Length: 77
Image 1 (cartoon, rainbow, N blue to C red):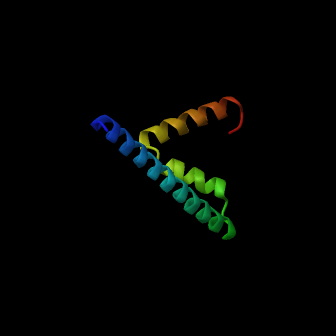
Image 2 (cartoon, rainbow, N blue to C red):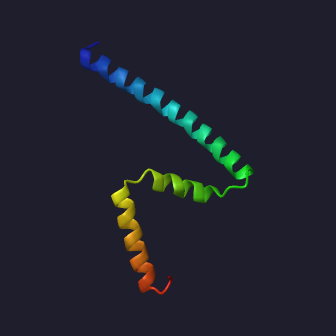
Image 3 (cartoon, helix red, strand yellow):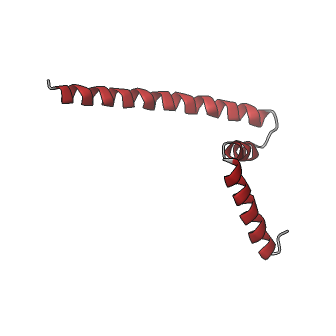
């Protein structure tokens, strides 16, 4: 086998491993959301909070400014 073939096999193996890890993490996250829901929290809001929390401050501010402007134009504020 050539070095290139060995490297390709290694990369494929790494991808397969990471895909399996991703499935396991997704199952763990799902279980946490079930717990959140069982405690009476709104999972849509929790997801939104996480999304906002992971957004850069300047991007968040720009988003809020545009959202407020659009909603104002539509008479929703």
